[in-house]
Image (cartoon, rainbow, N blue to C red; front, side):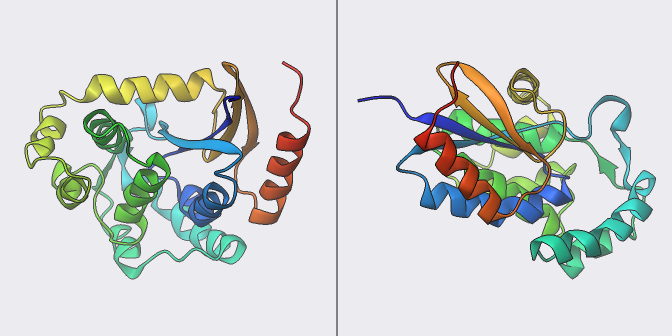
Length: 215
């Protein structure tokens, strides 16, 4: 049997546009699962010099939220909006990427599209602080990990797993978030960077399936 081509969704837990496209990606994974192998990778929006207090981005986020909601139909909860009143909150993509990597390492059969959605949900629906290891306790429990997984975030022993996620995102050409990547026979091509609606992406996937590009 011929191996399915891949569709990889590169997201970041702090990325509002990733929350905006999350339902689109879930729908694509459901509708095209017979034609493509879907997975997610946790990218690194807030790394290096971008790691810092929420206050550095709060005004930009406040201006962006209505546009994201209008374009995508996604809803940013009141709990998430209240986070913007706490400019001291640290934003660091290492924590959500470590959490993602811990679940995948412990449960390799995990639906990573769903896992990515659940991490985004912590931030944009539940209003949890992603730089707080305790924010992931319920998520770990839901995916069958022991309570000690939180300690692996606190002591950062899961850092290598996060760095592998970031490296894979870079290797596939994900320079912004969200990025959706098409992969076949070990070669990867960004299909889109930024938000696209279901109609555009489903058309693109249909074309890719019917007429795979030459490698």
